Length: 100
Image (cartoon, rainbow, N blue to C red; front, side):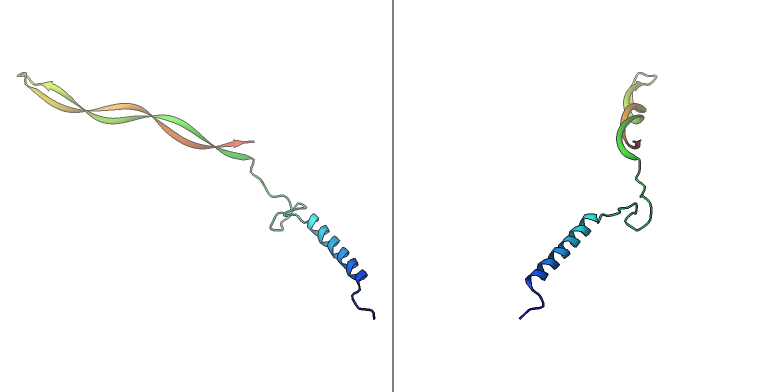
């Protein structure tokens, strides 16, 4: 008695299905053929720059109080606070665009 699924037709169907599956996997690629992932035509724009972090220094006048000794007209000593400024270099971190 012949069965509907004999060995020869089963092997032939497996070969055809396997070749079809392999062929479709090899040709599938995301965003291929000039289309982006949303189905729009043309290639998506890629930025032509990158960001680089640099450190620069700026000059800042920092105020502070200094105590000095002064003498009045009778020769008595007294202390007085005066405001002075110190000049310091402060690091500043910046991000800049570097074009290719």
